[in-house]
View 1 (cartoon, rainbow, N blue to C red):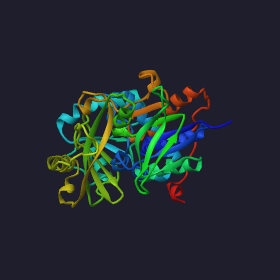
View 2 (view 1 turned 30 degrees about the horizontal axis):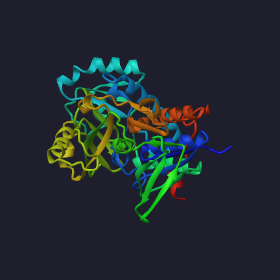
View 3 (view 1 turned 120 degrees about the horizontal axis):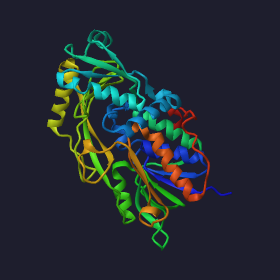
View 4 (view 1 turned 135 degrees about the vertical axis):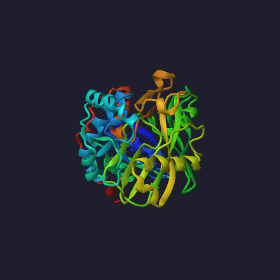
Amino acid sequence: MTKPHAIVIGAGFTGVAIAWDLTQRGFRVSVVERGPIANGTSGRTHGLLHSGARYAVNDQESAIECIQENLILRRIVPDAIEPNGGLFVAVQEEDLAYREKFIEGCAACGIPIRELTPQEVLRLEPNLNPRLLTAFTVPDATFDPLRLALAFAASAKAGGAQFYLYTDVVDLLRDGRGNVCGVKAWNRAADQRFHLPAEVVINATGAWVGQITAMAGVQVPITPTPGVMVAYDKRLTQRAINLLNEPGDGDIVLPQRRMMVVGTTSFTIEDPDYVPVYEDHVALMMERGAALIPALRQTRERGAYMATRPLIGATAPGRSISRTFKAYDHAETDGIEGLVTITGGKATTLRLMAEKTVDVVCRKFGIEVPCRTAETPLLSYRKFYQ
């Protein structure tokens, strides 16, 4: 029996996880990506493997997704994750007003926490603000973004997926009735243009999904929402540090190898290909980060950069938009067969996003093979280039 051919546009976290899942469920898979693996937002994330505690008060659907996927990723891709844990820290009286809601929210979402005295916290992390008032342990962790993406890509490649890197999708192939039946591609490295037919095209381009759906004449409700991060040239804590309060700008500081990263801001843009890094955002990261870890003021800035979240919603402010995700079958929403779009979500939920997207694709073909990616360890990230 001939395998149905699926094209995945985008080799960020979601795209490579979808490619891996598709190969496990009997598809022939091609991945088309205009740059290298993790070229866009995925390569610029701060690398926090969320426990879900950040969303436990106001976005419990996302919080539950995060804690469940946190535990799964630790099992299936351990060589991309530093299981260093995290702390939510109160440094002002107003932070303490959030304490009860935080405890109740984490309990409701199944997130294990433990409250520490200031003395206990400072023994664990002596560079934290010595005036801190209380703190909670959470099962946060950090991950290496490139290794995480490459582990999924290596596993998909071993399952037969073919990767077309440095290749733009310049248009969609149509069947004469308006349905999508493949892509028109341009390999920019070799300056070769070609057509790639397929039974289904999956748009997993993150903040760029609107550019692909526009080729089909349809829209999805997405708000490209960048955030600025700043890296500092010294590791000052072992754990991911979060401010114990409503999510806001510059309230996460985490170690990445020998550096510290402070993030993020949140603002909206029209063009995800041009995102400025504003000086006042960089200054704000220093101010907010130093409120948690004062030694940041004496630490050299390594660099400032940005990443753009593909949040669901067309008009709401970025902080108020849910961090969950949605897969669109454009046959159902727009009467166009052959095109599926996935958007929203977080790096922590990449595997679940892939599972739900491939569920949609399988239903279109009457395929009833269950998802097994939650139980199947990934290959080493090193295998992708071997």
